[in-house]
Picture (cartoon, rainbow, N blue to C red):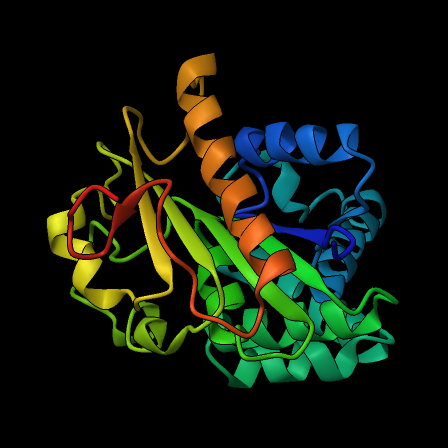
Length: 254
């Protein structure tokens, strides 16, 4: 029997919003003694540090006041922040983030994080935008399985964006998408299932994109599917998984 995988949690792009569902999953893996790592963009952490320095040094233009800034103050804020970013050890990261799409940067940063870990076999558990980053690097040799809560198949206020879905059918690693039926980013398997490949299972829960207050029974279903995908990756990594714990992408019950 192969040892359990290390777990990497990749949460939402809006870090101001907590991913309580990932906290619950992390607790379950922790109870089994599996190593759990939380991905955080070093660029984002550096940016938050710069914001705090600005708020302390220049409270008159600090955005933390919650008030709308005049154009001169807004220009001053960005000028000083840009100067501090250029002096930061992460200046190359800041430059790339200014030139490349956010989803591409997120994938690149997640891959660098995974490569920095000593563990060679990893399962990535995501919420929302973290699912896009994880599935885009699914072919990486260290990534053995993916579990995605609230995959953002579409933005409810935008036209279809191909970067969210065009790569999904190529994901050949064991994967499960756990989606709320009221999720504004995609809640109907009949609509979003066509984007997923044969290695992916679907679990539908009675919740929205936030997963707040998910009852124990619903969480148990999600955990069963995650655990199953984990076991598939451990036992037969070279074979296509058999989906027997959830709903297949065709919408049939396995």
